[in-house]
Length: 120
Image (cartoon, rainbow, N blue to C red; front, side, top):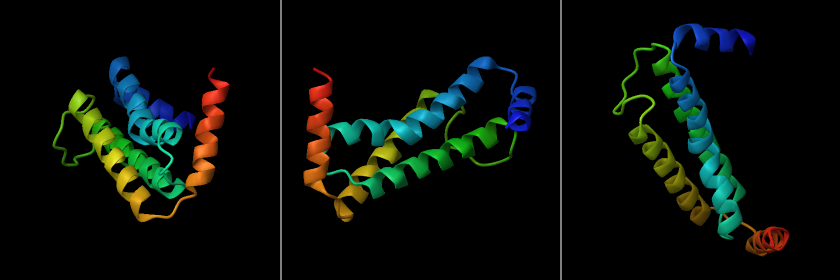
């Protein structure tokens, strides 16, 4: 892990770019499943897993481009467009896969109700 951090620090000289890439992993991979897990009882764990794996792959791809890999991209690295693309695809995957896979809606509703009670 230290070697990877050293490589990133030496290759990417901008702290803002490194912070953006770090936040990209969170927004593309965890934001949609986490938020929708508390709000939408129809969401499934399979959909959340696929959404997170997409976010990890998308963010890793962007990290490789930022490190200098000659890979094609249709957006500027560390841009709002990049974030919107990642979040949008993550959302689409989460919703579509939730409708295609079977989930336990009763258990999901209990979880959401429990979370709401704890927030009061």
